[in-house]
Image (cartoon, rainbow, N blue to C red; front, side):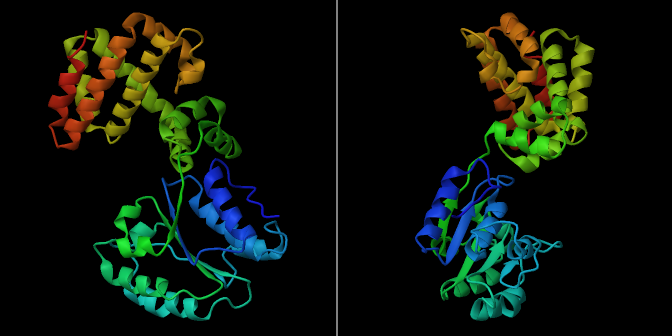
Length: 329
């Protein structure tokens, strides 16, 4: 029986590949498309194990060699570390094409895996992409390409058309919570990190580091307090500080989510806990909902979203932020 024990929160992708394995109908090329940090590369490695392991995926020497990058028939090609990071055409011609012509060497099926394929083969650097396309157009038996992309639209349409696409969505909040717990993240740090991660485990781990997610939430609470009752000097100082912050965009996203929670709490007929992103601050959010009301909270969501759009169009940050801070109260 095929097992993908370590893959959580992607039931559709798992079922698609399990069915292909069971029916012995693996495609010659796949495009795993979806946000980063949701298990795409992990599932690619799990598929290689499931195909080549006598037990359908376990902890045997074959699986350990695959997972550790020591198996000659399961190769992973990351983008370059320097420059634009796209793979050079020489890599395709001198490494990838020879492998595609002679592999597998000892396994049942060879796998060539390309994390961040949209970085390795972007449309604007088409030479390597076209060389790769030629390889995909000449599929051989027992060889599977897996291209992994957070932004598949950056790949040539002709490459996308040669691949069977498998969609990956954001991870459920409980799955991200479990991942943080397995990484030893303290409970008091998890909630804000999960709320701001957008279903991405990599982002949640980054936000959990040194309590960064909780710091973003505290920033949002400072802004809300200033907008509702702060003096002129306080608002101007806060706007200037936020304009200089490297986390400005994330702080505003956090403020938007906070007001969404306030609006949801104001509309809830009973316990609003299940509807809140920042559940660990439920008491404070419910109090704020009584003060603002859901309509005012929704208005503030719209105002922050409009500010984000203005900043994306290169509006002056200090002027735009001052306008937000003086719009209410």
